[in-house]
Length: 391
Length: 180
Image (cartoon, rainbow over all chains, first blue to last red; front, side, top):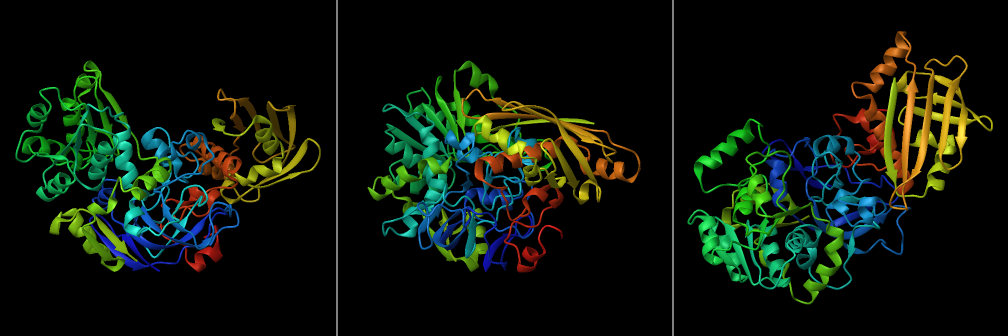
């Protein structure tokens, strides 16, 4: 089959690879009809997530049709011919973490748990196409994928909605939603979201459906801010204004009640010297992550507010404003999304028209053009917000 | 050398105890074991696999057993690598799960066998036992050892670094199996 693979730092390549086969009894093979490029794929390509290998099949946002099931798959849950969206964290459904609905922390699905444990203290779940640290599973930017624990994660789509309406249930819609849900939004809340990329846009929409009074979008790309504004959110361009002053102005000096970091470890900064400080430290690996957004969110949030982190971090940061966090009674909440928890309720919100995930799609390309897709998404060319690939 | 490790398995104590007490199950999750054959009520014959030093076999006997709580065993006769183990099963505070606490003791000899065993355990010997317990947990909770494209042979995963790429296996790789 054809698949988009990691080919070294800053390089992806669509190649011929073997077709997947059943390796565990509860596997299924899915013929992929739609897949997407995620912002976190850029962290892999940029070389900020260790343990990638030449030839790794990329992609963790995909859906398609079940073409084969292993002998252990419960036929009451999944059969050949079912149309499914596949959640990016692989979860067994049986361990303590899964019992607590902490699917992205599943204790059984990462065969390389030992490495993850060294980096993170405790292991994390397996993830499709997302380095060997999260298990070494082939991803979904391909014609076919092997899906372990196929009777646990995949969501069956039984209506005739278009792929584009439901594809993002695999990751970015639940991720954005969880970012807003962790904020415990009250009707009087002003919610500020750093990053108007795909996850940020969905965090903003989710904050709105959860009842926020006002949602603020912070980014530097005018087209991304315009996209947020068209959806009813208030734009703040950090290259044009001082973010903290603007946020104080927009909130009568209180600061946003809830702040969402939808950027993570490769943040850019309006102020050149601070950007340089973190870029240099990151380049020589004195810190692995550039935490501008996290710092700014903590400093901006009103006392007693919540800072919710859904942007990806991988290692260590410094200059963490621990004093502001502690003295102003802030709550810091975070996690890789527990996608399985949110798929069904969010499908209902899509079917009822409350959420329209298609609004962020700017490019649809054949899988063969994945390399170009990465290029324009990474460099924000051609007003690129989200690339969907068709195998 | 004494190694300890512990894990929590979301299954009741009697089930985990019974799985372990059938010693023939041990090679499904303990990477260094090829086969354990029950030879009597309390006696068994153990065969280690290649990375632990070729053709090492020994007899063992259960020397202490409290149903639902503890199993202790040790090698008998002139084993190449005299060893002993104790595993305890403790109900976890959640009322559903079982804590498994294991202690293994190896009397590592000199010579080639000693070197092979030392090499197998490497610089972080406890890691082997941690991985063994992780696989026990996978089997008890999900039915089998979990495989990925990067580490397709389950029990062999430690042998598989650097791993093969995370892409599906070719037919010849599948035919060849774990012994590459």
